[in-house]
Amino acid sequence: MAIVLLVEVLAVGILVAPLRDGIGPLPESWVLTLGVLVAAGIISTEASLGVERVRQKSSDESPHIDLSSVWAFAAAVLLPGALASAVALAIYGHLYARVWRHSGVPPYRAFFSTATVVLAVEAAAGVTELVAPEALFHSIAGLGAVVLALLAYAAVNMVLVVGVIVLSGPNRDLATFRQMLFCGDEAVLEFATLSMGALAAGAMAALGPAYAVLVLPPLIVLHRTVLVRQLEEEASVDGKTGLLNAAAWHARAGRALRRAEREGGHATALVLDLDHFKLVNDRYGHLVGDQVLAAVADAVRAEVREGDVVGRFGGEEFVVLLPGVVGEDGRAVAAAVAERIRKRIDSMCVDVLDGPVPLMINHLTVSIGGATFPRDGADLGRLLEVADTAMYAAKRAGRNTVRMGMHAVPNGPMVPRPTPYRRT
Image: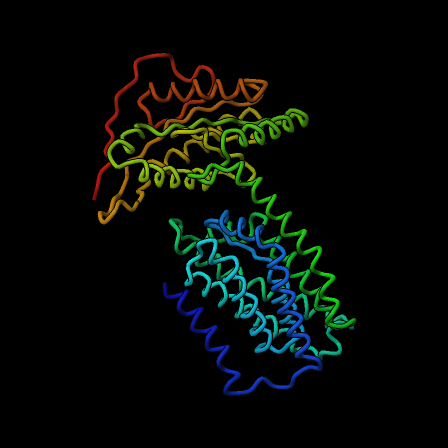
């Protein structure tokens, strides 16, 4: 990919430039500062070796925030850019040898990740050099420079990593990029890690490099806390679609419904079932079917709000809770959301990999049933029962349609519908 090559070439160029132009004026005790930062980075990795290996293996198609950026950012604040990049290279080289290689991370990914860190370090160092070193931790201007350096580091690193993840994935659009960049806990963890780096730099500048040791205990605890959160999140997520699994959806939707009940609000449950999906698995295999399910999950997510609760119940069945759909028109609003989902899936063309032969799955359709709270039921179980009945009413009406409520359509024979999945 061109952007990956460009990032790597730019990082190499920045590393080589000081050999020609020189590093410039060096701060006092720079050798000790450099050595302490490299040693602290190696010690923190070794102390959390098992945790980091589990975290690395568990992370998949999302930015992996390794906590070594504490020391890389501290180096960017305390040292010239060239020396700070040397610290980053030493720390991340050790990280690859001890964590990434054992977790199956290919060398090209490790090289790109290190290149993004080098660019982020250089950007942060360039900002802090705008303020005199003696004023960096003793003035409002210095505080502003550190904050701007933190933002520059985070922007360069996160934008490059998230950009490559999005460009290499199935949904190459701005909405996906924005969601991965700003939503979720990864951005919060990045800023928390960089803030620890700023505090470490301040302590080392004011009290001496040896005070970096005080950052190690909270950093090791943070490693373990992040792992627990990551494992809890994985336990609630469906591996094929990235949506909530059935148990997690029930728990979260139940909380949302109880909140609506306390506040006198409304909500709508939607049950979605892909039509004739078994034929996809039978004709092309379950691996292709899994890719189609993931594409459908993305389509559903794109048509609902951030606070709506979306999950996969298993097989080809999905479920959505829309809290806050209020008033007499609540059913119409929910039906409009369901209709948007239906139309989006009906217009999908899913390009999937099936060995050397390109494969496109199109003419996917979905039947959707809905039920509103409190009109159709006073608890989540009853809502799902009514929505499921309405979904089967949509099947009987010919599939690829939406039905809402307990009396969606009268019972009748199911109308057959062609299933033109095709290979191209």
